[in-house]
Image (tube, rainbow, N blue to C red; front, side, top):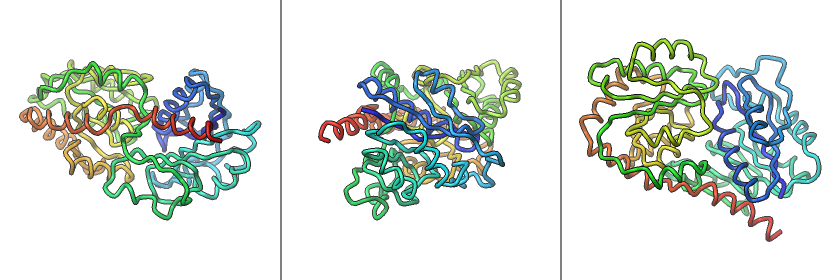
Length: 363
C-alpha cells in the first residue's frame, strides 16, 4: 500500500501535526506500507527529522514573502501559499498512484481535497477544528469535546467514516508500553514534568519555572523539556541554573519515559494531552490556542484535567497556586489520574492503521 502524507511544521503551527503523522507513518510502515511525506519548508519545519527516520520527503518551497501570519489562528496563512498553488505542488510531488492521501493541515479544505481525487484512491483527513468542509473517505478527530458525534454534521460526504474521540489518539508504542508498567498514583507530588510543545511562543515554560521559586514548591523535582523551536532557550537555561531542583532536557523522540517518572504534569492542551492521559498522569493544563479551549473546558468539567486557563490569562502566581493546591489534595491527584487513564488506552494508532489497511483489502 502506498500512502502520501501532506503535513507541515512551522514556528506558527508547531510540530504536533508532524509528530502525530510520523507516529501513523511508522505504524503503517511496520505493516508493509510505503509512506511519502510532502511538507512545505517553512521556518521551523521537521523535514530533516522525517528523513532521519527513514521517510522520503518532498520539500515544497517556502513562500518568499512573510510566512508568519498576523494572527495565530490565521490558518489559511499557515499553508504559505494559496490552496490552488499548494494543490499543484502536491500533485507534482506524487509519482504514480497512491492508495491513501493523509491530510493534516488546518489550511486545507474540500477544494484542495477534491482536486486530489484524480491522483489517489482515498483521502483521510486529520482535523481538530470542525470549522470547514472536507471531501474525504475517512476523518480522524481525536479530541474530547461535548457534542463530538455531531461535530461534522453537514461538513463531510455522507459515506465518510468518522473516528472521533481520544480513543483514536495517534500515540507512539512507548506510551502504551509505559502505561502497562507505570504504578498507580498515590496522590503525592514528588516529581513534575513540564512541556509546552515544540514552540511555546508565550513562554509558558518560563512562567512555570517561576512558579517553582515559591518556597512551598522548592522540594519538588522538575523535568522540563524545551521544544526544538522554543525561542526562549537561553532565558530558560538561566532560570533553571538558579533552581537546583530543575532539570532541562533537549527535545526527544518521545516523552513517555520522562512522563512515567512524574507524579504530575504541567503543559499545553494539544496532542500531548492524550499521551499524559494514556499514562494516567494528572495534569495542570494551559490552553495555548483557541482551538484547544473547548477540549480543555470539557476535560476539566469531567474531572480529567485541571485547567488553569488560557495562556493570556495565566500568570506564574496562578500556576504556583494551582500546584500548591494539588500538593495538599492527594485525593484529587488520584482522581485526575484515574479519570485520565480511563479515557485513553493507547490503542488508537492501531485502530487507525486497521481502518486504512482494511480499505485496501476490500478494494
